[in-house]
Image 1 (cartoon, rainbow over the protein chains, first blue to last red):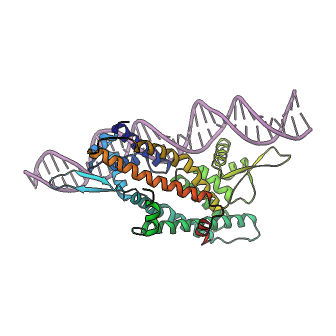
Image 2: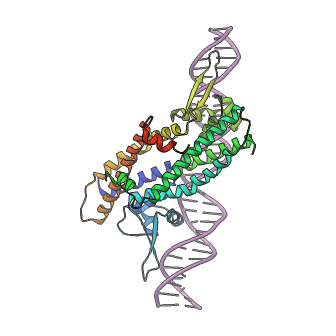
Image 3: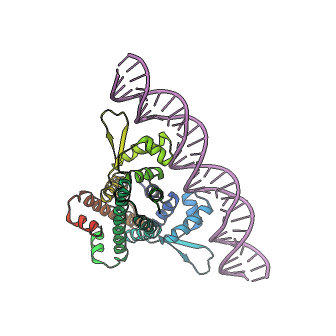
Length: 168
Length: 168
DNA sequence: TTTAATTTTCAAAAAGTTTTGAAAGTTTAA
DNA sequence: TTAAACTTTCAAAACTTTTTGAAAATTAAA
């Protein structure tokens, strides 16, 4: 395979993966493009390389920035903004885990805590099943939360850095 | 909060969570309903409790079965089918991880392996960046794969069962 | 200042996904 | 067999999400 075809396949695959995981396809594709671009890239280049509109490119790049996956670069004497992505896979995974924890896991835990407080008739099978399922899922969610904390803080941590970098 | 309202909130929350994670909302809601139902439930009950059509209920239940999250129950002398879900959160998490590995991670690894093989000019910055990103992401994906294998096989394994059940 | 380059916004259009419901198919009891 | 009870299918409709593109806003250099 030629490099050009391979780059395209990488962009497509990353895009498909994103949409399977609740991330919009274009956002994942723009991220993929930045991951394989040696130099920071302008909005124009994103637009032309992925054949998307200016509005789309702009919004997507801002989203990626809000996810902490992409940064802007200023160049003196130039009005244009350049964008680049952190290319370290482990940093990317950590950043995504951190954001999803904040955006999804924590709000869900708040709901589960509230639902676990609901009182009812201990003899009612509906109540018992509800309460058991809610508290059981909550304990799993709490563990996931702690695990992600560990992972996020694992900058120099022996366990994770060894564990995840073992086979690099 | 009353049990009825709490049940509804649980169903809604689980449904929202599903759609944030690339699982269709109704499928997650049906799963939630089964999680808090003490007895197996019929298609009719799913339809009326969630106000969805027969077609939708049928397809969704079949999807849940194909994900290994729900099972059918036959009752002698009855034509109707009853459905129930495994209610253990850890089993659910394992099952979802296992399916997503098979459906998404493994196909992605095949693409990454192919792309990591692409040869090019070692002095070309585009080639170098491409190759580094692909191999780096591949090693992360391989680790995720191994981690999920461990997790799936961890039926009686001390590490995971301790780790995830510690705070139950 | 002014102006031209660039970014941002957002309503409308396009694309994608999910749901419906009626008809076709299947199964089982009698 | 037959027929009633139930399940499955799928094209069309409803709904949701994403994308476009032109206009408005902003910025920095001159």
